[in-house]
Structures are given as structure tokens and as C-alpha cells.
Length: 375
Ligand SMILES: *Cc1c(COP(=O)(O)O)cnc(C)c1O
Image (cartoon, rainbow, N blue to C red):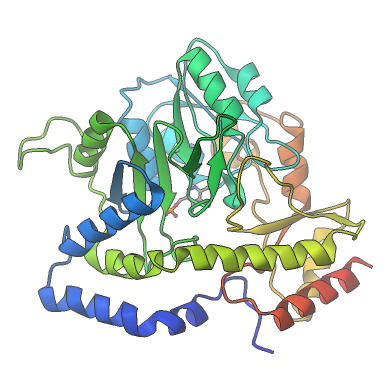
């Protein structure tokens, strides 16, 4: 059996090596490393794939979130509602811009932000709802969009983990993840669903005016060269990364299908196991399974992980501390008990190996070993 890894980027690369190398070689031969033709080509291909009007490639997913918030004309003290159970970047950019992160709890089944909690958190200062499509599944966008419309709020989606998933509204309209709100943000970090060989990210929007602002913000606030209309940043996807991404985009549906079939295998094998809960399903969303994350039932997670490690099976905890209990965010004034679901999840979630290259032998071995560990 091949060694089991949390993420196996090497085996994935081996299968597309010739294509990737040839595309990267073209960039090097053209010596066009920044704002090259490859970036424009990838941008166009991704716009088609997502069926969105504008993709703006940037340096990473965190920058994408920051630039999204910078583009909305917000003022210091304006409130942005976001889940406390997420990766730090989501909240970090809100705080960095002098905006106020208003944290809310998540849904017990889907681990995504709870619309009821959002409703309760709205004040006169609320300007943005920032859902995170955690682990590859879209949040309850039907409810969140309705709340946003009712209160005239912007919706910025953190789609860093959900590239390749879709959401269908009750009216039958179906959208790619990140293309339902005013702006969507994604990351091309190597281990993400669509990953490059370094850092990369992008913003999505169907709004022409916002797209122009976003492009300018990502390029030193400039539209006409050396004329700076606003205070911007320097954030761009380089041509070598775009070359890799353009090759991988052609395989993305197949990559998502591979993740989904590994998840189905786990689900079938673990559904009857009364010591854990398999990932819950948001009925209007497909799941891209960036992570396959189970919930342990009051078990000692360290012991389970140690037993798996002893069998050569890696596992990870995303995320061990919710944002409201992180040292850097003490100033928000929260305490243990404020967000009980997120706190419970942070104690009891466990992510199993999940990537595009898992085979049946490995999956069998993982579930058998996990069941033993749970005894
Ligand atoms: C990865 C990730 C980010 C940040 O993306 P980077 O490209 O690493 O900056 C933001 N939010 C979530 C939920 C992520 O998973």
C-alpha cells in the first residue's frame, strides 16, 4: 500500500507533469512573469468555469478577502458578521481594516454560519455578512441572502475551501460557490481544491463597478498608470502560478469527483458507527470535500489521533480553537460559553486524509483502523 498522506500533491502532479512543465516552460521562455498572457488566459477560463462575469486574480486568499472588504466603501467601526469557527484569515482582515468582527456561532450539522445567529447579531452598524463555506460545502445562502436583502447588507463569501461546489436556490437558480454574493473570495494555496505551486487567490463578482474597483485596489489603487485614485495594495497572481492553475482547472471536475467518491466511501463505512457523526449535508449545496471532518462523541481526541498515527494514518484538527477564544481577539470581549456549538466542534472534530489520489486499499485501511481506534 502507498503511504497515506493527509494531502498527496506529489501523486497528483506526477499525472499532469508533462502539461504543467510545458506550460511553465512557456512562461520562462517568454520571460513574462507578472501580468503575462497566462494570467489573462486562466482568468478567462475560470470566469467560464464559474459562469461569473469577473475573476480578479490576486496574491492569495487572505488578500482576496481584504481587498473585497476594501472595495465596499466601509468606515472604521462598521460591523462584519462572520462565523467564529473558521480559519483566522477571515477575521484577521476585518480587524486589520479597523472594521469590527461580529462573531456568530455555526450550525451543528454543516459547521457553517447559522442564519438565526446572524439575525440576532444585526445592529445599525452591520454592513456585511461574511459566510465561510467551510470544508467545501456552501453555507445556507438562501437564508443568508434573504437576511442581507432585508437589511440591505453586502454579502462577501469566503470560498477558499469550496471551489468546485455549487448551490441551488429554491427558485431553481444554481451558482458556483463564491458567485452568489456581491463578492466571492478564493485561495489557490497548494492544498486547496484548486491549488498552485505557491500562493495565489482570486475575487469573483458579477458587478462591473465593483470589479473595476477591485482591480484598481489590487494594483496600488491605479487605473491609469501612475495615477493613484485610492489607497491600494500590491497583490497579484504571477504567470507561473497561472500556468499551473490553467492546467489543473481542466481537471478540476475530476478532482472534485475523486474527493466526493472518497467521501462516499468514508460515509458508507462509518455511517453505522455510533461513536462518531459523519459530515452533515446542506441540502441545497454540493460538497467539494476540501476536508472530510467527523465529529467524535465525547472521546479523547488525542488518544484516537495517537492510535491512528501508530498505524501510519495522519489526521488533523481544523480548528482546535474558535476565533473568539484566540488570544489576539480577546479585545472582542468574548468568553468560553459564548458560542457553544463552535466550542464543542473545536474539541471534537477530526479531519481524515482527503485528497484526489486516495485509493480503495488506503480507504479500507483508514476506516478499519479508525473503527479499531474507536473501540
Ligand atoms: C485558506 C483559507 C484562507 C486564506 O487563504 P490564503 O491563500 O492562505 O491566504 C481564508 N479563509 C479560509 C476559510 C481558508 O481556508
